[in-house]
Amino acid sequence: MARQVKVDPAVFAAYAFTGRTIEYHRRQIRTALGFREATHGDRDKLTVWLAEQVCPSELNPDQQRQALLAKCRAERIEPPGRGSVDKILGGANRSADERFCATTVGRLGAPATQRLEELVAADKPTADQAGADEDDAELAGAFAELKADPGPLGLETLLTEIAKLGRVLALGLPADLFGDIAEGRVAAWRARAAAEYPSTLRRDHPRSVRLTLLAVLC
Image (cartoon, rainbow, N blue to C red; front, side, top):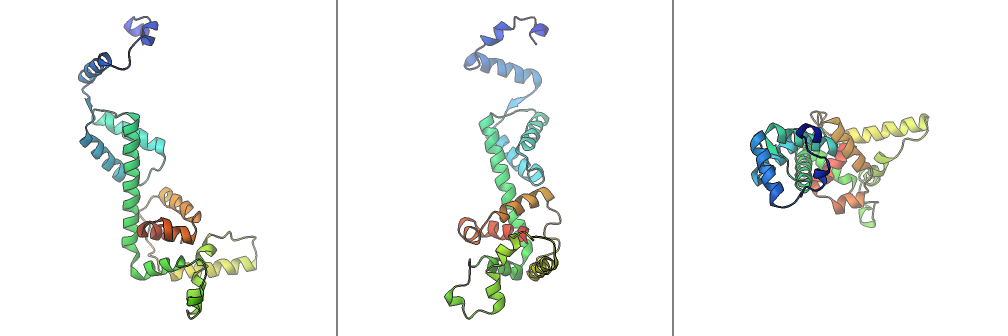
């Protein structure tokens, strides 16, 4: 670039990157290239756009950032500073997660929702559950079973996995529950669910998040 504009490269090191001069030069550059500074309204629109068009299928932060910068170029908007970009990405991902959870819960139906909640109703049967039927007692350990590794191949393993599959099918989850959801998002939430415990699902997550994690795992 120094050769193109015929300026000694050493001058670059002496340039003041803060203050009035650089602000003036930036205005000149924006005017010459037809760009404008991002407003609060632009940031809100970019957040919504990312949440709706990018984040549902693209979970890689670097790819999300590149998509945001490309959108800014297309809209002739000077990209916000790094801090603002991080806030936009954070807000867009939260919004995409909330929409995913709301969609999942809305598709479950009351019976499936109840059965999912029963999976983490208690870590183990308590004394006051003594009168519950065998199915309800078994549900207390079902969450741990769902996460368990199948173990070595053999007849016992096969029968255990068949029983596990039967229990999952009995939950009555809609067959197309995640039919239009990106596999990457489903896989990421499944990994999250596998790292959870019944107590943390009950204590640390809102109902919509808890149900979505359970549904993805099942």
